[in-house]
Length: 124
Image (cartoon, rainbow, N blue to C red; front, side, top):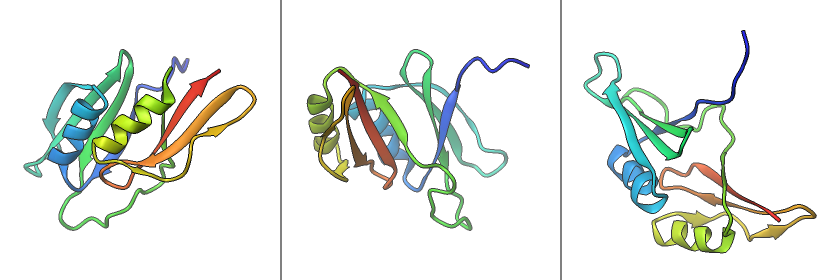
Protein backbone atom coordinates (compact mmCIF):
# COMPACT_ATOMS: atom_id res chain seq x y z
CA UNK A 1 0.00 0.00 0.00
CA UNK A 2 1.30 3.45 -0.92
CA UNK A 3 0.41 6.54 1.11
CA UNK A 4 -0.38 9.38 -1.29
CA UNK A 5 -0.95 12.13 1.27
CA UNK A 6 -3.33 13.18 4.01
CA UNK A 7 -6.95 13.25 2.89
CA UNK A 8 -8.38 15.19 5.83
CA UNK A 9 -8.03 16.19 9.46
CA UNK A 10 -10.95 15.29 11.74
CA UNK A 11 -12.12 17.73 14.38
CA UNK A 12 -14.75 17.11 17.07
CA UNK A 13 -16.99 20.16 17.54
CA UNK A 14 -19.65 21.10 20.09
CA UNK A 15 -21.35 23.73 17.92
CA UNK A 16 -21.58 22.57 14.30
CA UNK A 17 -23.24 25.75 13.02
CA UNK A 18 -20.56 28.00 14.53
CA UNK A 19 -17.75 25.77 13.24
CA UNK A 20 -19.25 25.56 9.74
CA UNK A 21 -19.50 29.36 9.63
CA UNK A 22 -15.88 29.71 10.73
CA UNK A 23 -14.43 27.17 8.27
CA UNK A 24 -16.57 28.31 5.32
CA UNK A 25 -17.16 32.05 5.72
CA UNK A 26 -14.06 33.07 7.68
CA UNK A 27 -11.56 30.70 6.04
CA UNK A 28 -13.32 30.47 2.66
CA UNK A 29 -13.85 26.71 2.65
CA UNK A 30 -16.61 24.83 0.87
CA UNK A 31 -18.75 22.00 2.24
CA UNK A 32 -18.05 19.12 -0.15
CA UNK A 33 -19.96 16.38 1.66
CA UNK A 34 -22.44 15.98 4.50
CA UNK A 35 -23.52 12.58 5.76
CA UNK A 36 -25.15 11.04 8.84
CA UNK A 37 -23.02 10.06 11.82
CA UNK A 38 -24.41 6.56 12.18
CA UNK A 39 -27.91 6.62 13.64
CA UNK A 40 -27.22 9.55 16.00
CA UNK A 41 -29.38 12.05 14.10
CA UNK A 42 -26.34 14.28 13.65
CA UNK A 43 -24.34 15.00 10.51
CA UNK A 44 -20.64 15.00 9.70
CA UNK A 45 -19.46 17.80 7.39
CA UNK A 46 -16.42 17.69 5.12
CA UNK A 47 -15.09 21.20 4.42
CA UNK A 48 -12.50 21.66 1.67
CA UNK A 49 -10.29 24.67 2.47
CA UNK A 50 -8.31 24.40 -0.79
CA UNK A 51 -8.29 21.62 -3.39
CA UNK A 52 -7.35 18.42 -1.60
CA UNK A 53 -7.15 19.98 1.88
CA UNK A 54 -10.16 18.95 3.95
CA UNK A 55 -11.31 19.40 7.54
CA UNK A 56 -13.90 16.87 8.74
CA UNK A 57 -16.22 18.38 11.36
CA UNK A 58 -17.59 15.66 13.64
CA UNK A 59 -20.33 16.50 16.15
CA UNK A 60 -19.70 15.61 19.77
CA UNK A 61 -22.47 13.40 21.07
CA UNK A 62 -24.25 14.29 24.30
CA UNK A 63 -22.42 11.66 26.36
CA UNK A 64 -18.93 12.38 24.99
CA UNK A 65 -16.36 14.38 26.89
CA UNK A 66 -15.36 17.72 25.40
CA UNK A 67 -11.74 17.30 24.42
CA UNK A 68 -9.34 17.79 21.55
CA UNK A 69 -8.43 14.11 21.92
CA UNK A 70 -5.10 13.15 20.32
CA UNK A 71 -4.85 15.85 17.69
CA UNK A 72 -2.41 18.73 18.14
CA UNK A 73 -3.26 21.36 15.52
CA UNK A 74 -4.10 22.01 11.90
CA UNK A 75 -1.51 24.05 9.98
CA UNK A 76 -2.77 26.35 7.22
CA UNK A 77 -0.31 27.41 4.53
CA UNK A 78 -0.68 31.07 3.51
CA UNK A 79 1.11 33.69 1.46
CA UNK A 80 -0.05 36.54 3.76
CA UNK A 81 0.09 35.51 7.40
CA UNK A 82 -0.82 38.97 8.71
CA UNK A 83 -3.99 39.26 6.61
CA UNK A 84 -5.11 35.70 7.42
CA UNK A 85 -4.52 36.20 11.14
CA UNK A 86 -6.59 39.41 11.07
CA UNK A 87 -9.38 37.61 9.19
CA UNK A 88 -9.43 34.74 11.69
CA UNK A 89 -9.51 37.14 14.64
CA UNK A 90 -12.36 39.09 13.03
CA UNK A 91 -14.21 35.80 12.40
CA UNK A 92 -14.22 34.70 16.03
CA UNK A 93 -10.78 33.17 16.48
CA UNK A 94 -8.45 34.24 19.27
CA UNK A 95 -4.70 34.80 19.27
CA UNK A 96 -2.64 32.19 21.07
CA UNK A 97 0.62 34.09 20.54
CA UNK A 98 2.35 36.48 18.19
CA UNK A 99 3.53 35.91 14.63
CA UNK A 100 7.07 34.54 14.91
CA UNK A 101 9.78 34.70 12.27
CA UNK A 102 12.27 31.90 11.71
CA UNK A 103 14.96 31.43 9.05
CA UNK A 104 12.69 30.03 6.36
CA UNK A 105 9.19 30.92 7.54
CA UNK A 106 6.72 32.89 9.63
CA UNK A 107 4.19 31.15 11.85
CA UNK A 108 1.64 31.82 14.55
CA UNK A 109 -0.94 29.90 16.53
CA UNK A 110 -4.56 30.88 17.01
CA UNK A 111 -7.61 29.22 18.49
CA UNK A 112 -10.71 28.53 16.42
CA UNK A 113 -14.30 28.76 17.66
CA UNK A 114 -14.12 25.38 19.45
CA UNK A 115 -10.75 26.12 21.04
CA UNK A 116 -8.96 24.10 18.36
CA UNK A 117 -5.34 25.02 17.70
CA UNK A 118 -4.70 26.48 14.23
CA UNK A 119 -1.17 27.22 13.06
CA UNK A 120 -0.65 29.73 10.28
CA UNK A 121 2.46 28.98 8.22
CA UNK A 122 4.08 31.21 5.59
CA UNK A 123 7.21 30.19 3.71
CA UNK A 124 9.65 33.06 3.07
